[in-house]
Image (cartoon, rainbow, N blue to C red; front, top):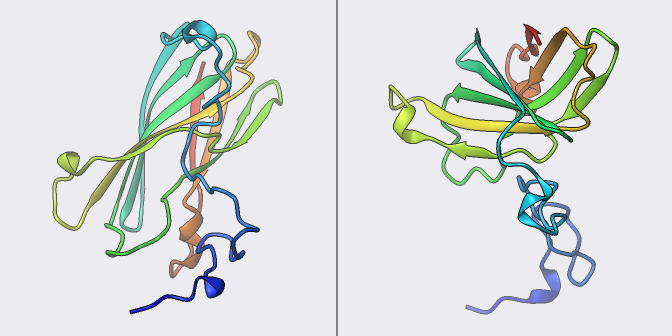
Amino acid sequence: MSFDRSLARCSFCGKRPPEVGPVVIAAPQELGRQSTPEALPREPLRSITIELEQKQQDMTLLVHQLQLYQKHFELHYLWIRPPFPSGFAFVPRIIFFLKDNTGAQWAGDRGGMLLARPELASYPYQAVYQGSARFSPPPSADARKMTIRAADPLGQFENPPLHPWQFEITL
């Protein structure tokens, strides 16, 4: 079987070689920016345990911890949902919109990690993902409350479409 490479296209962006460069999905944004191991502290300055859970349709989002570092903060969560079909070529993500009581806002998923955790699934029709989203700068010292809105980008294709999850936390 032969393959005509002149017809090849990137499955992500649709461009043909040599137009397309490497495509990296679900990698931390800070990757490659650190010059020394102490560039990003490994231990948070403060951790807030949240343990809030919301369900909609066949999915659950559990927001369990907020970690504050000197130059950024991380939101840690578990996402429980039906498994993706085999051969599914999309990296699952949760997109966040955060706003604190001072009016500061953060959006996106900002290069956090997302790991499949099959050992945490209780049933064969469940998939569990453990994720974190990284944002900067951290909230100011005046911030006392934060609203977290989270959406599954694929939820727009559900019937009925999924609404964003919403959590309120005290800092």
